[in-house]
Image (cartoon, rainbow, N blue to C red; front, side):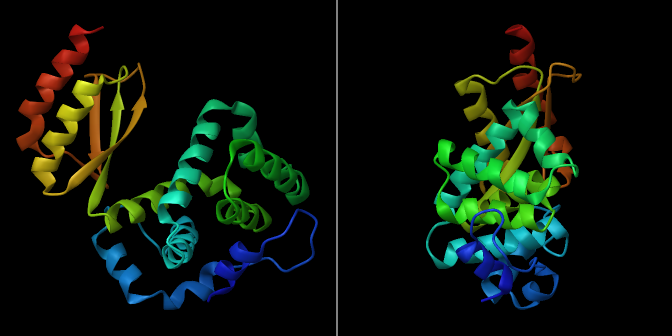
Length: 225
């Protein structure tokens, strides 16, 4: 097993001795099953990128231990904490904080949030390697791999206001019919956007054949304003 995966499995508390782990060399021999998954995942998932390498290594480890769903839930939980806390975003993004400071804070956060050991260790490794600034992209790439393994694709949806349950279900059905796979929605609310609804799957905006159907959903959003 590659060094990064070993580090995720055995990572200890902040301040422990050990060498920084670089996944650049170690992930060149990923299993065929993972490489195949990468080929058909979302267009902007690139495991040769730095975030992609970390996500791919974690996915390999989680899949080998039947913990993909558990880790995916942990990462979604951590992303929610990031979205809600400007202090946590500052901790993650700033190079001013040392690994000891970041690692100690992450340990406390993971314990309070109920984040499991594998995911907590992964965050510690990322922090130690000074790559925590890219954690959101790592989470996005991991979720794309997990979704693809389930035969799903993820649509990045930006709305001017929150979707109702009925609107979300209508959108999922519309997109699923277009792409021929189950579609999971990753919804963000941005009141500043024009048109009320932007949908992106991978690096592609939805094609013109969906515009009429999406227009009806947009109209519903405007009517609910």
